[in-house]
Image (tube, rainbow, N blue to C red):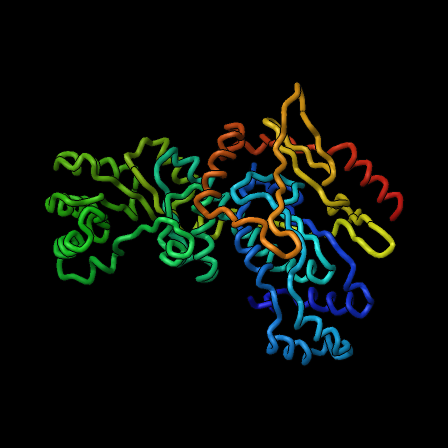
Amino acid sequence: MNALLTDLYQLTMAAGYFEAGKAGERATFELFVRRLPANRTFLLSAGLEQAVEYLLNLRFEPIEIEYLRGLAQFATVSPEFFDMLAQLRFRGDVFAMPEGTPVFGGEPILIVRGSLIEAQIPETYLLSTIAFQTLVATKAARISEIAGGRAVVEFGTRRAHSPGAGVLAGRAAYIGGCAGTSNTLTGMRYGIPVFGTAAHSWVQAFPEEMESFRRLQQLLGENTVYLIDTYDTLEGARKAVSLGRPVWGVRLDSGNLAELSRQVRRILDDAGLNDAKIMASGDLNEYRILELMAAKAPIDAFGVGTDLATSSDLPSLGAVYKLVEMETASGKRYTAKFSEDKVTLPGAKQVFRYSGHDLVGCSWECPTCGPEGESSEALLRPVILNGELVAPLPGAEAARGRAREGLRRLPAALRGLFEEHSHWKVEYSPELLALHDRVRRELV
């Protein structure tokens, strides 16, 4: 794992901690989103598998250490610091919400506890992988909810911000509710269903559209999906049905999808292909799908690319990674920020979920019940202890199931697109608030 995949200041701070004799002190960091973005009523956590993989494989190769030695910022750093980097492994602890958990503002998604240096250096990577996949999983959940049970396939690698981002977008989209992805590496690596048959170039590569359809059917049999809008959509539909079975269906990628889908449905039915399906694609998002659903367009599946793989209406997430406590030879010290609009709460925490609200408390708290004796679920669970994985992580399929169940438990208003004033109540325990007040009095 490339340990230099981080911001330089993580490494200059690490050198500073080492020179100041603080390398052996233990620190606890929390990764969270301060508040939900204006156009989201929930987030769906994702990216933990990649975060854990990074931590368990964190190490500095000799060539990386030599590169750091040559930087001006490290000119006065002692040789012992680089020797320490050569031996550095993550030996700390991680507590996290399982992937697929609905999460809200102010709630830790992941907690890292370890030596100050080993807990500081991963900040950049952890923020990147968790924030990105959480964005895409959340977007997929919104689209899948609006699709009302119709399959949604992630098509976005070609428009993703990098090929690697496309692989992870396909994974996150599946967790969020998509039926699968067009990315074959995602399918192989994470056991996710893959979809796709042919592009417009397939049709154009043959002298006649009919020949391209015939060859496709010979190749794919019952998995055949004809892309029928290269030239004339309705004529393409007529040619497709003339070949009869086997066939899965047709895909529409342009034009008035609502009206074309009705006409194509009639052509399919008149030919006795009542079970043949219609897939729609072409710059779709949750709002366009909502319009198609409202128009009762006879579309059975949607392919969504750019808007999903880039979460285009919310292309970044303001996740932060903040120090909340330190353990030194003189004892434990709680840390917090009090700057305007960027206040953080001190101490490691736990999130307790009830049927209608969440309670964020200190990690040592154990509230037994809520209103009317209701029990809660502690969302942050041990993942790594002393540098060792506690148990194999659930795969994408299990995370998808958890997401489905977690979203089902949310009020319907939170799953809609136009309910910006609906929100899930997040409260802070009296003990956590008292700790915050005490630390403020000590520091300000």
